[in-house]
Picture 1 (spheres, helix red, strand yellow):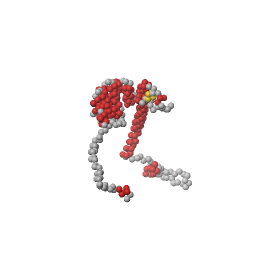
Picture 2 (tube, rainbow, N blue to C red):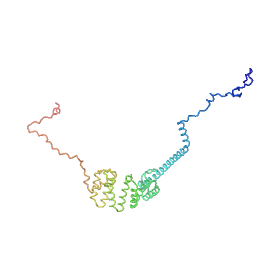
Picture 3 (cartoon, rainbow, N blue to C red):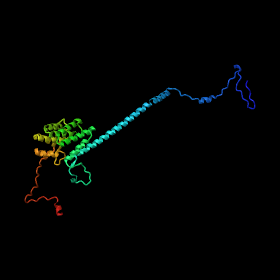
Picture 4 (cartoon, helix red, strand yellow):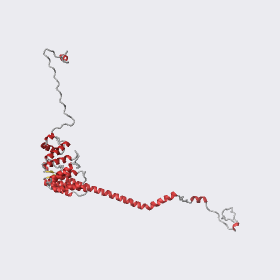
Length: 334
């Protein structure tokens, strides 16, 4: 049986109960607050499909993260290497082009003579390279060509064109012919400098004594399906002029006259030459067939028919009076 609390409140209170039904054993009373315990208890989220998918994605990202970072690092490294390689190659090409330009200037634009005799102001930079004589120019051009790198390939091919021109200038047409032929084989038909190579082949063959071979080569270019067979096409005027000149050298003046006539019909040789070969062709036409240069009537404009002469005024008959003029009164002041 439980004890009753005293009035002073200092005595301990026995919180056990006398449970006679349980054989006199006492049971402790609950000492916790159910509402507080329920509120503080952490609730686990519901394990539904969405939660499982998000959790799986996070775990997959954690597992594949190093691989993704490694791939990104490799991509950045490859991109950086490509940019470096491109800039290095562009720098090398620019340097090679500079050497090529210097060699081309020495080969084609060098002014031969004493600088003091050219009339340049003292200390002025000449617009073109200077050389005291032809030997000095040739030596300087050869040294510059030797310094041109062989790569890129396009720079090497252009250097071969300059070497061919130098060989022609130095009296070595066979060497020039080999270089020109190699250029045409290694470049496309529509290359910007293909005409120079084809013209060089013709000139080299002619200089080597093979005029028939030169004529055959230039005829292939001027006639269908040649590169310059279309009337009034670019460079065709030079091709026709060379063709007529070689025909004359072979003693075939009649065929040369036909070629010059074609030139005149397509380009119209004038008194003041407009094309690079107009002066040469006009001179040859004046020798072979001057009638080609006679003024030609425009087609479709026939000459006007001669007009009949109108009868003059009738002479007055003696004793008759001529009719008065309409302005007679004005002349007399009436």
